[in-house]
Image (cartoon, rainbow, N blue to C red; front, top):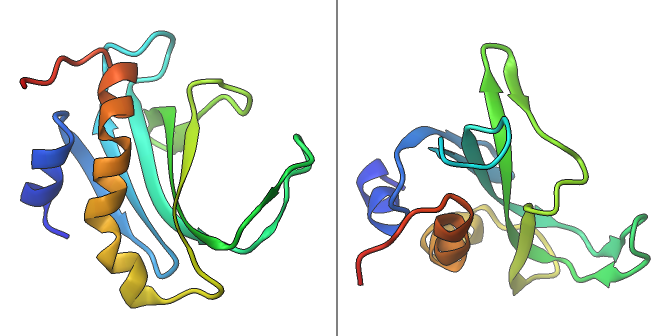
Length: 127
């Protein structure tokens, strides 16, 4: 997905975009976050069905998009494990991973989290 397309959905500066085989990552600048974090990490990925160790709830197999505040350093990223600002959204249930489907969900993933990203980053979006 091109940078121009992602920029039109999320009204923040795109710092980095990584395309891995089983996931896609976006890092957006968000200096107005509360705390030490200076960026938002959005990632689209496939997850097998399973049960959460923390909540005991099961989740279906499918494609998810997650958002979490991070602090970017020269060595990578730092984040709080139990930060309540992180979110995960199920985009589509799927019994198995398909690379073309992951690529097709790029726009949907960004549209799904755009309002939450702007809310957490304290950015007003023009109507």
